[in-house]
Length: 106
Image 1 (cartoon, rainbow, N blue to C red):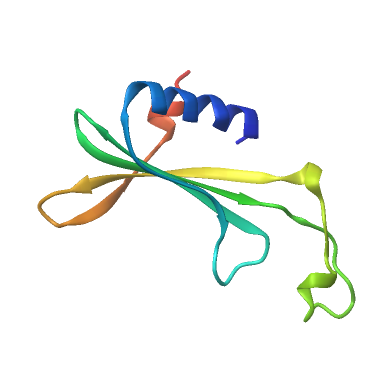
Image 2 (image 1 turned 180 degrees about the vertical axis):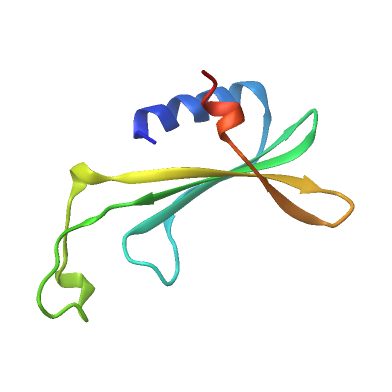
């Protein structure tokens, strides 16, 4: 998902729902060059959480790959995806759902 598309989606979410939490992009522990941004909102169907994962692919991997600080990342080749979860009161956990039904209507 393109960053500008995500900005538009965030604007829509914030204007239509009550925002309970919004965490800016943070590194995902145990991964290389992956950031996670999350927002939790309250709507008519209850609590919903959206998580956007963004990966900056490696453009050049040095011969010694044990030192990821030496890798060169491509800022132009950013890839990202969004996952959606609804709070299940009965189980007390988040159930994943397909966000394409919400954000990618044709």
